[in-house]
Length: 137
Image 1 (spheres, helix red, strand yellow):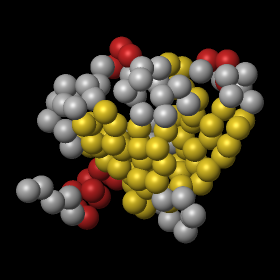
Image 2 (cartoon, rainbow, N blue to C red; image 1 turned 90 degrees about the vertical axis):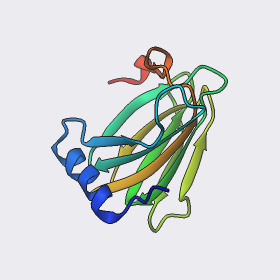
Image 3 (tube, helix red, strand yellow; image 1 turned 120 degrees about the vertical axis):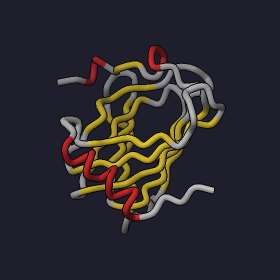
Image 4 (cartoon, helix red, strand yellow; image 1 turned 90 degrees about the horizontal axis):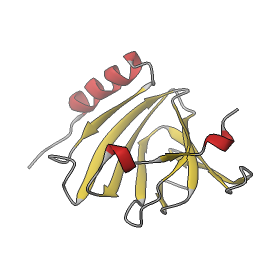
């Protein structure tokens, strides 16, 4: 059994605060070949994951926001915004599952946020995500 208490997760928050990306990951899976990839992601205000998508059929992902609020925006292939969701504390949406090929971005809009990400493995960095470069300003 593993228990992830406040002290353990506070250390992750400290790493996010000192990161240039304003976020830090804590993998719960043993390695990238495991069938289920699980990780905590600590984010600080302004942490932004640029629009991207996952092209392989097994590359769905689920975010469960435990603390704070993140904004998830979905886009059409033309770059037009389709939907904007606020996920987390005080919001109607607490978790979201994103299908393969859904173009999306994620931004931490609260001072800090903590989310659990679950996705199917294996994880291969070279095929993990495709940048939606046409959406960059």
